Image 1 (spheres, rainbow, N blue to C red):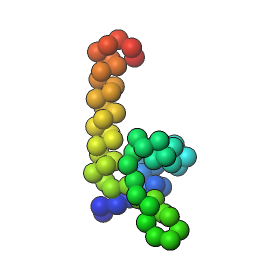
Image 2 (cartoon, rainbow, N blue to C red; image 1 turned 180 degrees about the vertical axis):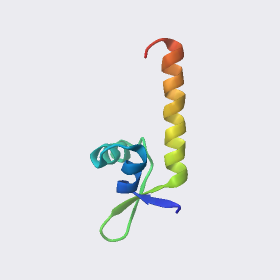
Image 3 (cartoon, helix red, strand yellow; image 1 turned 90 degrees about the vertical axis):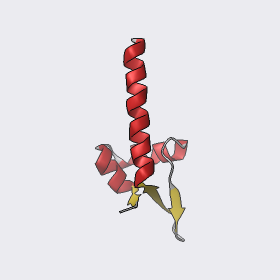
Length: 67
């Protein structure tokens, strides 16, 4: 599946739905609105990019000793 509902993203990341909505609202996790009801969808590749970015941030924090 190319596009994921925010509920699916929350399940994948093992976080609560409001946390995913905050990531989308901040622009940290790119998403698009579809349909008349404005339902949000996250492309799977964007979720994978977000995860890789977070791994890189964690590595940088650990190497800087700011963990």
